[in-house]
Length: 539
Image (cartoon, rainbow, N blue to C red; front, side):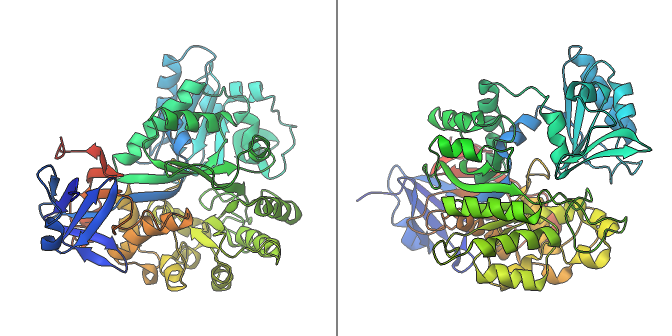
């Protein structure tokens, strides 16, 4: 008889939304071999079985962040932290840039990530002049939390060769006031600055993957999608992922989504022989990314109705160009993972996916995705469901940016954003995710938002869209696996599945919603091996 390697008992085990809870589970050879009543599972224990006593807490399938940017997250962890949790005033933002510049060699880039102009005391973006005063001898570029706009100082503008007469590139905006540059670059215009920032070297890319992957594991994740591979260092990012995997430095199972668009690596990757579904359960190529619009917080998501401040956002491509890209990548066999937040952008993308769905190249079974999919109509939801097109939303956006949505779009549109309940009721698989480094990777903030629809200021937006805790965990586990064609291997705790399991510090299924926010991952198994063990229970 082959005895279990690990026996989990002493608390509840959430097997999946349909399967409910078990009293115990057993793991052997990296897979789950039993999940059910304590007595039946205990019979699989032998003299060398290692036991995990939950102590009344709960085990769940390990989290799956179905849309984030793992490598850029790792890179940004070395940049100046400007996130609103720590930086709420312009003075503090400029102080951090000033301090970083003092520590950097003259002429070296100073990069900052995560500021939110809506949370700053001045209620606006920093300006080129302010960044120049803070760091006159260094090029500076700071990126807003959404990742769709950033501000450069004078040294950065000079290096990029951008002046007041530089034309806006297609799908991008260089902001000017009274004919003068403010330093703000939006959408594809950011490439003018980013193209001058030195790329990380090969070793730094692998370090970034390992750094961010370790960070994710420590929060209870064993799977992610890196949603735009190639956006920093081109094809070298693919090489870095392969090196990290080969060297045992890839902490999380990674579904690779390649950067499409004319400035992406799609064509070069295809010429190199990279094809959909190549790889294994640790690293697999599967999806293709194209940007349709920007962000609602930055006023660049493409909307059918104007923002409160005026304007309807930015399309990255005209319809013909977008539809051509979708048809091309669909024909190559890629899963389409298309960034579209505003309803006008969603319409552009959805109509393009529908046009690509032909008798010779059907969309059925392809599980095309609309990433973010924040503001859409019931008719668009029905059309997506009819073709098996899945939404991959970030409920945590409501927590971090919900009050800004009210300011930018009005209460009614803010309340309808990211309709998790509607998607589930339509039979879809809304794969909850973080879009890190845009938002926090903390899974418990994300779950809290799904079950309360509360912002970080306590505003309730769209109470009709709340989920149960079981449904929220389902969206953060099974639905992510489904969008990665892996629901037969992960996302539930059932016999035959990979033993990707997270033990939580609390039973979030019985806790008060506020207590979910202070929950932690205590133990994380990936393939039956402890990849994080906060208290050394398997030491």
